[in-house]
Amino acid sequence: MLDETLAAITAPDTDAVVEATERNDRLTKPRGALGILEDAAIKLAGISGQCPPPLPAPGALAIFAADHGVHAEGVTPWPQEVTAQMVANFASGGAAVSAFAKQVGASVLVVDVGVAGVVDASPGAIDASAGVLVRKVRSGTGNLAIEPAMTRDDARAAVEVGIEVAHRLVDGGARCLLTGDMGIANTTASAALIAAFTGSDASAVTGRGTGIDDEHFARKIDVVRRALTLHAVDTADPLGVLAAVGGLEHGALAGFILGGASLRVPVLLDGVIAGAAALVAQAFAPGVTAYCFAGHLSAEPGHSVALAALGLTPLVDLRLRLGEGTGAVLALPLLQCAAAALREMATFDSAGVAHKDA
Image (cartoon, rainbow, N blue to C red):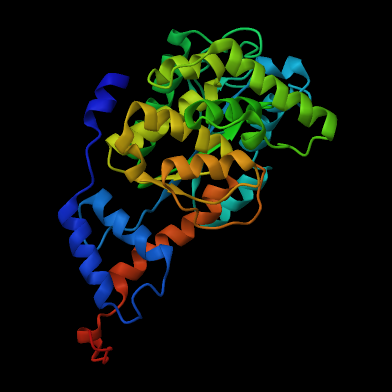
């Protein structure tokens, strides 16, 4: 499945990009007045191969949940069972992202790709009432500070879960895919992935996650540093990097991004977890970022480093650090407005509005 997906990822439609650029320059506004929304609209045209592009609606959020063996290193004061508890909270509609998704009209699917605890749904089946899809590759990763987080086969399986979910949601009518995540200690694995793919020092990409104190923070940086030294990862082998220091949700998110790109559907990224996963996806397929939009800029320092490496500009900066997909969901109306502007605004000629001399 992974190989077929990579082979299906093609470049955006350049003719549609040119047409959208020319149309944007004729709209009744000063050139560039809508800022990065103009760039987003043109990018959407290239993705769809149409000018103006269709609205990226409806949006579908997939929250990939998994646990991390590195939790044993004391990188967070939060107990590991919170992951399974939050999956139940998502399923009952009680999380922040649940409220946001309802407000913007996005569907929510929670995917258990590696939760250590028990999720109340039948293995391999979807619980339509709860919105939980069980695709557990294994019950959490190993401790990346002392061993590989997972095997290569596990890493590939996680990626292919994400590809499957992308197809499921697009086949169900989604026209914009949104990334979400849940996993206690997953910012530690994210920092390791970002450091590996960008060559950054652990201290530059490791943040305080859920708001940890100085003691936990110093330990977290040390863990990331030790993991990178232990595994000596090769970024030319993205599956190997993912297996060594990543998370099961990172793998699934990478596959979700690759799947969206292969289906020519825009993918709206959330924060630092999604940024780390997008670096994995980019290593598999450098052109995948042509289908990605950064929903927001996380307060986690590694996110800005990841976005720079991905060449993506965030739509908003609200100093969020919650995860779940909250930033992506909040940005969805902005992406839809970008497309609507290119679709519905009048041109200078059609409105009879004078414009400045060239």
